[in-house]
Length: 436
Image 1 (cartoon, rainbow, N blue to C red):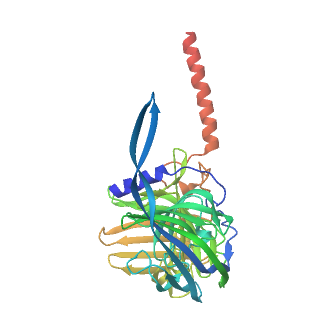
Image 2 (cartoon, one colour):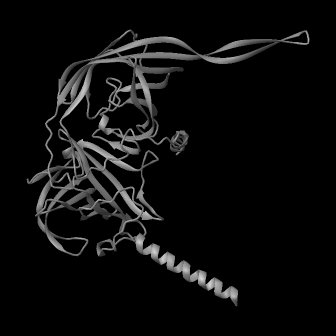
Image 3 (cartoon, rainbow, N blue to C red):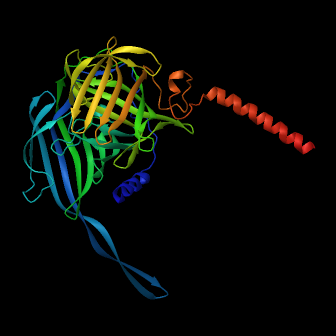
C-alpha cells in the first residue's frame, strides 16, 4: 500500500504537457497497421557516468564600513567518480531474436552491466540493458498498460523533448515506466525506440547512462498477414461475480479492436466503458495506478481473441490450449438463439468455456467457472461490432440489449431537452410564487 501511494505521489509530480508528437491511442480499428519491416541499429555506444555528491566550502568576503566580514557556507555539488563506455554489437539475427555482444572498459566490480553475449527478443524485451530498445509503435502519448508475453508495464507519458546526438537534434520522449509495484524509473526514449538517457542510483552513486552513437542500420523483414476479423471493433458486456448476491452482475462494457499486426504478433486495444456522471472510460488498475486503456502485444495464440483462430479440434487462446466440446445453441443478449462452437479449458479449480459463432467465427461468450466459489465468476457477452470512442462522454444508444446493465445509459440529446424543459418549469413556478 505504501509503495502504491509513493508511486502515485511521483506521478502527480509529473508536469502535464500536451503535445501531438505521439498518438494518444490508436483508433484505426477499420484500417489495421500492417508492419512488415522493423529497422534497428547493429551498433550502439553508451557512456555510463557515476557521480557522487561532495561537500565544498564557499567563502564570501565583504567590506562594510572598513570592516571585513568573511562568511563560509557549505554546499554540495556532483563529482564524477567514474566513466565507462559500453559498446553493443549485434552478431546474429533470427527473426525478432537477436544475439548481442557487449564490450566495454568496465571491470568485474561494476555489476550494473556486464560484458558478454546475450539473446534479446525485440518483441518481448522492453528497454533491456542488454539492448536498450522498445518497438517505437508501442509508444503512445497517454497513461496505459503495455502487456506482452513476458511482462506488464505501466507506461506514463510525460513530455517530448530534443536530444542531441552527433550534433543533431532528435525527437525524444520522457516516459515514467513501472515494471512492478516496487521497480519504476524515468526514461528518455528516442522516437526510433532507443534509450537516450537514463538516471538511477548505483551503490550510493548517481548513475547516468547516455547514448552517444549508433550506426549500421539493418532491416528485419516480418511475415505479416492480416485477416478480415482484425479490421472490426468488438463490444462486449462484462459480468462479474457478486459476493452479496452470489450471482453474476453486469459490471461494464468492454471495447476492443486490433490497430496493428507485426509478424505473428497482434496489437490489441482494450478499455472499459462505464457511463457514470459523464465519464465514459472506466480506468483499470495496474500496480495501484489507474490506466486509461490496455495495449496488448502478443503472439496470436496468447491473445484473448474475439474470433476463432482456426477451425480445428484444439486451438490456442489466451495462451492456453482449448478443446472443442461440441456444437451447441447459445442465447445472445438480444434474445436470439444461434448455433455456436463450444471450446473448453480446465485447470486447477478453474474451467473456462468459450463460444464462437458457427457462421461468423466471432467470440460470442466467455464463461469462467471457479470451483472454490462453486459458481461462475466471470462472463463476457458479445453485443456487436460497435466502436465507442474513449473521447465520448455519453453513449447515445437506446437499444433493448443494453437494458441488462445495473444502471441506465444517458441519451444526451433527450437528457438535454428534459433538463431545459424542467428548468423553464421551475423558473416559472419560482416567479409565480414570488408574485403571490
